[in-house]
Each structure stands twice: as structure tokens, then as C-alpha cells.
Image 1 (cartoon, one colour):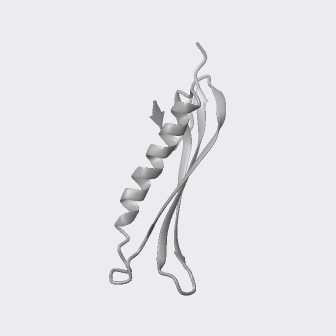
Image 2: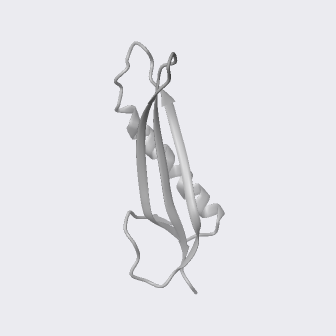
Image 3: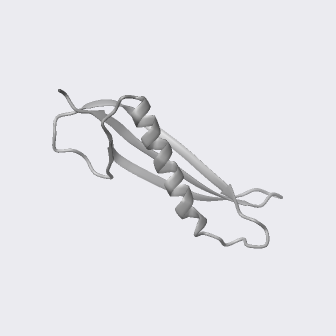
Length: 92
């Protein structure tokens, strides 16, 4: 199983588009803990890989991540990571 941000220069079939979203709440006493994004990226990658394995894919290509800091009116801030990619399978 592999994951890449690029395409493939090899014959493959597309299994589907996979998405994963992870988030965490920033505590009010530490509102700028942006290093928490690192763990969110890892979590999103693991979710994508698990979905790809469940779909019977050989790997993921064109993987992208978007990050957000969401501020609600009264609630604390949330860090959010959205990951998505294309699951592919190689012909046998």
C-alpha cells in the first residue's frame, strides 16, 4: 500500500475517491497550539490508508490535505484537517 501526492506513470484502474476529516479543539488557555496539526495529518493519513485497504486498492494517488482553523461565535477554536485522494488498483 502506498500514498503519493503525484500521479502514476503506470497502468491502473480507479477504485474511487476517498476522504477523511480529523479535528481537535484548542483549549482556551493555549489558543495557538498549531503543532497539533501534525497529529491530525497522521490521523487523516491513517484513515485514508484504512479506507483504501477496505476498498481493495493497491494505493492512493493525488493525495491532498486542506487545513482550517474554525472559530465559532462562543465556542473555542477547532483545528480541522481534510484529506482526500484517489484509490487505484493495478491490473494483474
